[in-house]
Image (cartoon, rainbow, N blue to C red):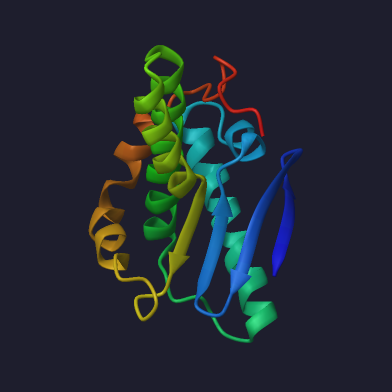
Length: 150
């Protein structure tokens, strides 16, 4: 089931399924994540706490993924989406752009599942301790170059 969470004036699209959430890396999420690292950390915490509370209300059980693991997974997908779009703006070779567009389709939808349904949950759990580092390397104004249109 798809949900829209209005957070800080932005409409964040999230899908809820049993043992899985799906966060959409769209222009609204990018706008929500704009700002300094401390602001982004607060906003990420609000986002994941909102999603997890709604998940628990809907399914009657907690989503068994740590906040830090969720934040890192979402961050890496958003950053890859950003880099791919920026790369395609700079590199004007059609076949390379087409290849990057295929990769971007995977980055635009962040599937975050519990370890029983997400074979790479261990990667995000391992990287969770580096949450602050990932937050700090994300550009303050993700969409300053207007590369994310939807």
